[in-house]
Image 1 (cartoon, helix red, strand yellow):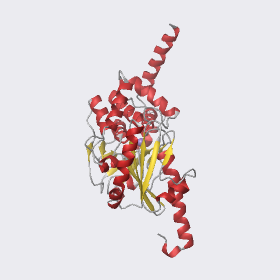
Image 2 (spheres, protein in one colour):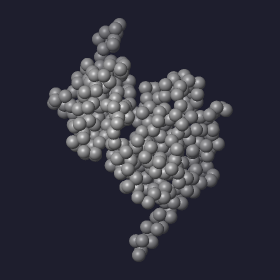
Image 3 (cartoon, helix red, strand yellow):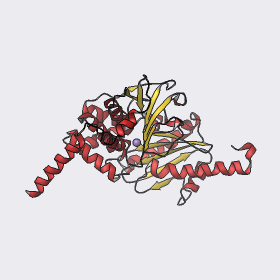
Image 4 (cartoon, helix red, strand yellow):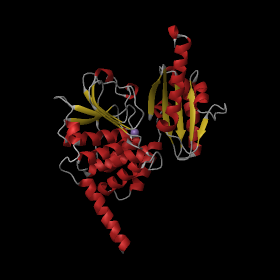
Length: 358
Ligand SMILES: [Mn+2]
């Protein structure tokens, strides 16, 4: 009985701390408002090949900025993927409008901070804010803007924190899209989860009024792994990111499935598609992660790709693939060592022959 009472009390405290809003005691909202947004619409946008975190974060952060009196609108670089579509349909929400050509427009970037992942034309756009949970990319800006980056499981966790810092109440729909984002990026709260993600998740869940969160996530996962009618190229680019490291460019697809048997089928399919993917892609190396909940298999294509893998992952045995157990995170496990290796190669090339590096 006592236990039950304290559970109810805890739930009440959670709901209260999620919904209470009003003044700006921390001054955080004032700082965000102090940026000169001009009269233009500020588009809040995530990365190319949009995933659930990118979409949910754009929606939730645009809503927060509007509550602060800023003329913000969530948009997307492309149509949402099946996982995101499933969750938005479940909630009865519309996905953000897709726009093209960033030139001359004004943006807050979420879930990315590099030109290679941004909407085309971003070098000729005005960026007035960044909220991200990856490494610092190459977006340049000499204006004083709000750049908020934390190594947490989902960008939505940071946006949740910003609602608290700005003392803006979280409506049910926005709690729901942020939950969608966190569930997706943390693979159902199993990967990259920090205490901050856990707190955001618990708090958002108390506001979101979702009867069966496990069923929602199961539906998202099924939608994500249903590749029916899709070409190998569509599957590869579904969750795909490009990187620049020193003078090298590379791309990584992140393909996910339920069973180890299907994993092997997908590995074979991507391996067969690699030559044509590579031919149409102006990059030095292509990588693909194929994962189940338990393991990740990393495969690659392009001259120097294997050499880069061997140098980046010392356990590599020359077999033509790498296996990670438990499953690997692209941003935490794969990208940092590869980037370090390719930056080192670039430096060595410049030192040994300054006149004609790659
Ligand atoms: Mn993310």
